[in-house]
Length: 293
Image (cartoon, rainbow, N blue to C red; front, top):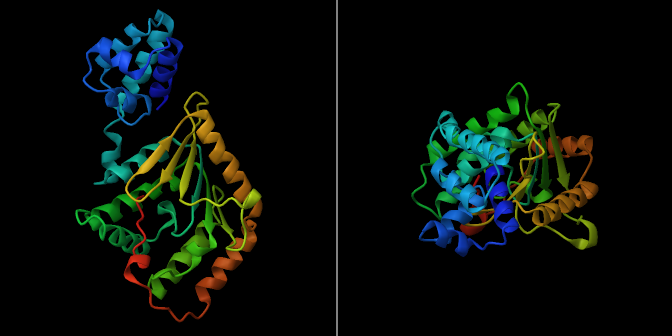
């Protein structure tokens, strides 16, 4: 991502379009360069050297970018330790591996990093209704392995903002739902984890309300670009430009301003976990809320 951001900045400095650069290098499509700049693919070192030539990068800066490119290329095998995972989970896992601060908002479901195995299995199974090729058990194993990032020696500071709807059963079997809520209460005791509920009758400043879940990532090195992933039905949008990321940072601040305090959130979750519930029948499409990560 950092490499892509630097290459995009250099292209803008030279006042070159994607098409002009690709024409000079003989690349068949601008999609290759676009994916490199967005941090969605790791380029070969030879491609990076060609781009640095096109942008007339001086020796000192050139060496720095070559080091970053080599680091990116040698890091591609780390995720094998997480088991098999689909493209969407891999995008989250790669960002989580190096994140220092993570703020996540979910309007309907519990975030993947906080899910119990039983809850995760139901969420993955629901998503498989739209994509029959999902290996449910492999996806669950990968999701649970990703949670190790919150237990490592130097864990990131993680803040989960949950719409109150995410604390409802929502078609989930009652015992699975209770176990999940108790799990959230236990996780909230960890010093690096903050869980806060946004009441269903509250809205951020001006009545704005996120329509989809999003995750905001900040990294230890200030030179690494802050990133937002926005969850959609079929894919996740990766935003890295300053203007786009700043809008989500403001939105997260406004949601925090109306969310319940930590202690009130824990009390609410504990009450919900023990409250007698008569499950209401749900239509299949409503119960099958996709959960990409």
